[in-house]
Length: 190
Image (cartoon, rainbow, N blue to C red):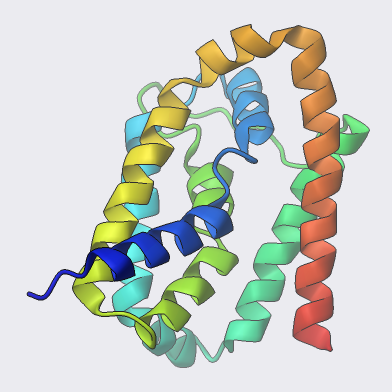
C-alpha cells in the first residue's frame, strides 16, 4: 500500500464538500424532531457501507440496473429538492413511518441520499480516476468519523442554536437544498 498524504487530504476535502454534513445540520435536527432521535452509529455505518460498496461496484451496479449516472444523480436531486421544499414550507412531504424500537429511524433519508447520495457516489467514481484506492478509502473513513461526531452532537448543536436559530437555519438551508437540486438538474440536462 502506498499512502499519499496529499491525495488523502485532497480526496477528503472533495468528499467533505460534497457530503456537506455541516450544511445538513438543519435536516438532521428536523429528522430528530420527527423521529425522536438520530441513530448516529447506524446512520454512519450504513453511509459508510453505501460509499464503500458504491466505490468498488458503483458503475457495475448502475449498468446492471440499466441506470446511467445522470439518471441516478437526477433521482437524488429530486429527493434533495423535496426535502428542501419540506424544510422551507414547513409541510411534511415524507411520511414519518412508525418503526419498531431499535430499528433505524434515521437511515433514510439521512444515510441515503443526504450523506451518501448521488453526488457522493458520482464523486467517488470520479475520484477513482484521480487517486489511488487506498487513499480514497482513508478519506472515506476520515469523513465518516466527522459525520459520526456531527450526528452525535445534533442535540448539543440544536441547544446552542435555540428554537429561533434552528427555524431560521432550517428555512435558509431548505432554500439552499432546492438551489443545489436545481443546479444538479441543470448540469445533468444541459
